[in-house]
Image 1: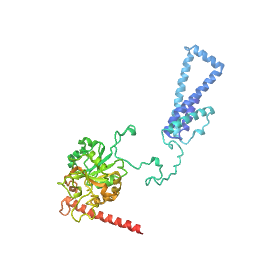
Image 2: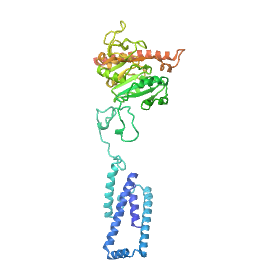
Image 3: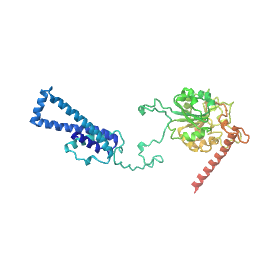
Image 4: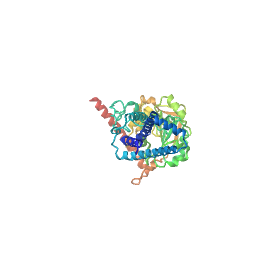
Length: 442
């Protein structure tokens, strides 16, 4: 085996202690350096020897003589020998990965060419791979502590921390900066079963592309909604026999929905014939409402006077209730009050309300009376939009997802739990107030 094959073997043998892909890249460049060095030396010898120069002239002048064929055979033999040396060197290098290039004595002129090839290739690889790949020693992790970072992220530089997210749907290809043609400004959620698909379809059509639609499926049936074109752009979350407040607590964290100015958390049994979503947003902003709901048709599903639609105004923020129901005209249910069937929250208000939702109290009863704690002054920032009104159809579809107990109908068991949760929530809130003020006093 001649010098060329040995050099290739030595080269590959010494490069096995680095990352494999980087070795392949280096091999190409270093092989170029090897052959360039060898050819340069051959040309030098050829040009420095008179006999060699004479020989070269003879060969050039007698191209049809047998010497040409001998030269061709020598070249073919050299090529085959070189390839064999490369293959042999590869397998030998894999067998002995601990041998390094600095243990092999190569001519100094060749080493300088190798160094140049290595440095060029190192710069190319560093642009493609993290700094610790292909290196025998991993760089030390920088010591960082930023107490103002979100909890758990104190060891990260602030520039890499992304504390908030969104529900924007993105592509699996292309430039990320070009994924979104437009970003919805508002989020609308419905907790749904397939039986109410036509009602939800009518409701969704009231919302433009500025509104991101999100469906919470309590019956586990999601693929059937693909019959609606808008369903392809909606976010679908499925968990059987769960309520909208269970979903809201787990999937609508304030940091996840921070991209949206307003969040609608609506039931599925709402008639929206007289509702315009864009106009609703305009009125909410105009009247400074942080927590609101559309007015309810007076003749259907009405529980509280506060949520009853008034036909002579755009918005109202207080009302008169039955005698004794309101200890203060600025307190619920006479003011600072909306129901939990169709509330709309500003981003800031929702950040507070979300923390008040209890994990185990899934129906949300009692929450409407406590919403006033999240805005101030509540009697000014909570109200009902009368000119954009809805109809409560009172369909107990989710209630029918319950189970009969001791002969009770499924919906009765659900209703009993709702009432029990209301009492539990009131007790927890009262105890939390008591514990806080007790701590302040001491």
